[in-house]
Length: 261
Image (cartoon, rainbow, N blue to C red; front, side):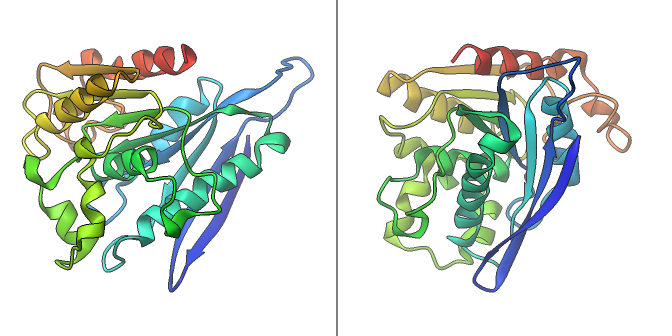
């Protein structure tokens, strides 16, 4: 493994991009690999460890070049998080040749508020001034129990993101209402009884994809708490209910979906 930490600065704030790239071995030659950027949740108040390195390692072990971003959170406000995430995607694309990354298979995944940030990269208007100059749009996205809209039951993330000073030019961040023809394929999963980010967020985003005729896959598992991450013993030390072999299969489903596009 090639490991590195890269500081991504925007104004007075900085995020850290954790790099986990595959090593080259003569006995295991490869042509090119997919890449995965992981965006952890935390209601834009913090970046959850349970949705960071462990998810990156899951994709690394499946042959991806993996990256995890700890982006600035409150008191940092929009557009800081979006710009730093765009910088991370741009950095991964600029490393594609040296890392043997397939430039057509650079994906992003996000969980909870990190799912909102990931979907924001997918939905972002092409002419948005703050991210012009960055190759920011993923070739496919994976969303785990994502925050999609303030209307759909999770307001704290938006309070942390905007600090109570939201303007009309931010309306596109109600993401079920701003899906465009340029959105990449999306794999979405959640649980039906998530008590923090209601599953209707995922349903609304999938419906927007369906309305546009875009490629997506949606899995709603019958039961499970918020924040299940990879849903196995790696994240269940303090939350035994997060260890669920049925839900843990989302990683298999997501990998198969991404390899199909």
